[in-house]
Image (cartoon, rainbow, N blue to C red; front, side):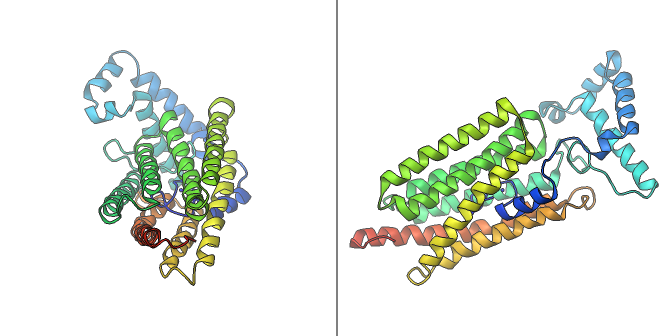
Length: 332
């Protein structure tokens, strides 16, 4: 996910740095890939659907299908695509060729109803870490702290994003993909708002309100374009890279300005650098180890500990703001 803080820390897309590099490698991202373009794959799917997905064969498939598969929307055609994917992978390996991607993704071994088990688990663990630290924040920081409500709202936006990331990696559909992308963007934009409130809004509430309205308009325009005009993966990556870079630089500037006065500033700075550094793992883009663990899953797994450092910073900063407010000290 591209922000100065993670999805509770950060977003589910690559960071600003990683996104820029990805854009240089490939201007546009498409959902069709080498594997699903292969005639052997397409013919296999057509034959499987023709043979197994009509009449008595279809009724037999539906009656034998586990309930959890039916509830997550797996169809007979989906099962044909899954089986034919592995047939094609086997042919590629037999001929000594590199394993291809299918429909924009590496082949993964399905576990129960989970299409990408490792990424789904990693997203769930990120969400749980976020929830755990949010509860700790609420139990430690009094509601009177100036950043209390803004931080809570940001955490809820982040939890929502990790929920949809888990759902998307469990079952990739038109709806779950859009929700994963849109919610990830929402986290980046709200992180910018969080930074704005912390750096400007405490002294000039009107400024943060105007920035908030602007960010809502940006989000609405972004979602509208991707929904009603064109779901352009290249544009989405460029947009997230741009707003992610704004977020990154804003937080780093604040850290630099307060390095002599706030003893905990390094936590925020380290979180920023870790997130954008770890997101570069996405560039490895290797076929899944054991058909489960790919670079995307490794990236998500690596961000789990960052939540604890990020919330340590939030707790320290919120308590500092509360104490300075009580003493009537000017907040920087």
